[in-house]
Image 1: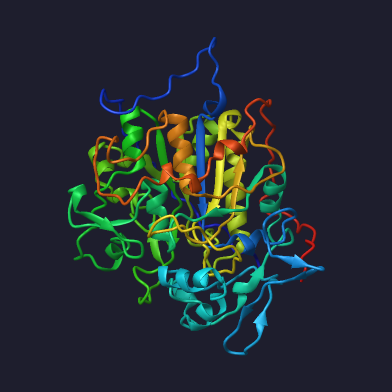
Image 2 (image 1 turned 90 degrees about the vertical axis):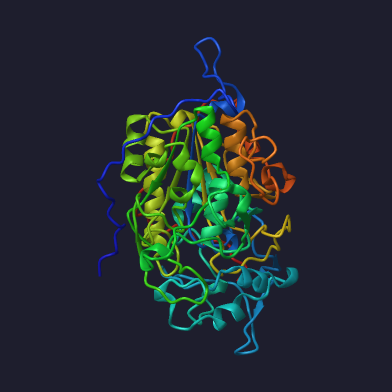
Amino acid sequence: MSKPRMASVSMALIALTGCSASSVGIRPSPAPSATSPAQGIHKIQHVVVIMQENRSFDHYFGTFPGANGFPVQNGRFTTCVNDPRTGQCVYPFHDTADRNLGGPHSASNATADIAGGQMDGFIAQAEAGKAGCEATHDPACGGGSTDVMGYHDAREIPNYWSYAQNFVLQDNFFQPNASWSLPQHLYMVSEWSAKCAGADPSSCQNALQSPANPRDQAGKKNQAAPDYAWTDLTYLMYKAGVSWKYYVQTGTQPDCANDAADCPPVNQNAKTPGIWNPLPYFADVHQDGQLGNITDVINYYKDARAGTLPSVSWITPSGQNSEHPPSLVSTGQEWTTSLVNAAMQGPDWSSTAVFLSWDDWGGFYDHVPPPVVDQNGFGLRVPGIVLSPYAKTGVIDHQTASQDAYVKFIEDDFLAGARLDPKTDGRPDPRIDVRESFAQVGDLSSDFDFSQAPRAPLVLPLTPSPGPASSSGG
């Protein structure tokens, strides 16, 4: 039986809308001249954020040498999770399956999985999920499976382990919100998850689990489109004249509009707002005339090849290549490798940083309790990898950090340290805090050595051979 391939990408081109820096707000960092080369963090002129789906740190890197993985004593795992159906405590086990089911991953499930820091709710939540409904991609589904205790290593994900071995692996890296995909993607571009009564930013209220969902539009044409009226990062970039694109893979997206729904996957493309593509409903994107910056991922490959990557790129997958259960791990790794290879083989590589992560834990076990920073997060621990010609080699970054650090890095690199702060950003909203100012967010600049000569790319095969087994402790 042939292996499923990545979903095809649309060839439709969306023209970029031009913009100029405003005399109000943030000034862009001056471009380096021949006599004044870029220094430090400003050697990174292109940030590429690749956001995959629904894997915990322990699920992918729990047996990675030197990482904060599964606790081991005398060669055996020391943590297990009770299975309420059998009364037995289930230890982590090597899972050879390419297709996983995971568990429920809403805000209530995060609370139950964390269990006040005991980190022992995963199997109960998976078994309480709607058995047999995993094919509907409902975030309340767990398939009634205990594969949440399974882990992969270089045998299933050799390219991800190669990236970790040759660049920087972050092993105390958390999703920004203790919930599912839509709130995380809102944080990824705006540092808040909210619901607004209208176009006025002052009407927005905090919403961890249920911000207005653009996916409702696909099945409920009479329902009003959501207003994301608060300020997102593209507003600061527009004011500073910093280029950006949000690349969308044509295909489908999983997860329903709410935890109680059963729904089939919904089609997505660059013109379709969705849980992984929320920017089309941000008011400031419309006001700034930048909807054209949301474009098909085929243009990422073209931009990387031509050396025309914007300063900031976000890349979102389709359901098939997202690694979101039940999509295949191998297909997601193939997709991600193609994105990284494109960056590495293009003329912009010498000034690029690729930030690779997974948006939430997907119900899979992780043994590290997340820090509590506010009422929205942090969520559970997820893998994070930093790839760059200036990234340190074979380093595990143990600092406590979250995906909010991507926004902080972009602001420090391109916006002279400006923040999405209602007191200073020129577009006040009632957000609950300024996440980038929190120490727990971390500082990704420590993952780089800007004194080193740019490293050569590490171009990997799209369909690699299995790597060696880890020393698992199982």
